[in-house]
Image (tube, rainbow, N blue to C red):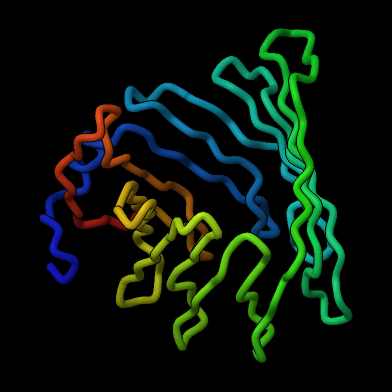
Length: 212
């Protein structure tokens, strides 16, 4: 095909994957839960209790392990300009003891400045990455300060179907998006790391994606 990958069926691709995730949205179209699964379909972790501000940006969320024990929390504070665009984001990440006492192991605060927008009001830089768009306003790529890069691929209907992640100039992870709801939200995404622990590569395949 046009990407040079071998095509096959959706069911076979699912068997080859190591991990995958499923997403849930509320009636207002906001993401409320992400459940990550291991290759044997057991739950790996759950991100939930998402809260948003009036602009629709995430204020907080919590991450739980497979035993439903709190592992970490994420909190965001934003500063906006008169147009409602973000000028600054302060993110606090707190990690907890996996025991029942929920004692704090460590926390960190990330202060992100230098949000830059183009003439259309689209974010093109946020202090951590630069964003490139196509003529339809879809994100084509994101380049990060550590030189890592993510490239997005869309089908003929303009729906995101694949993300390729690069580090040190090499393709490391392929993310395949396999299920959307009627509003275009991602319900399920599957991904396969293409680098083994010993540095050898998996054979890279791209398969037909079924929408249902």
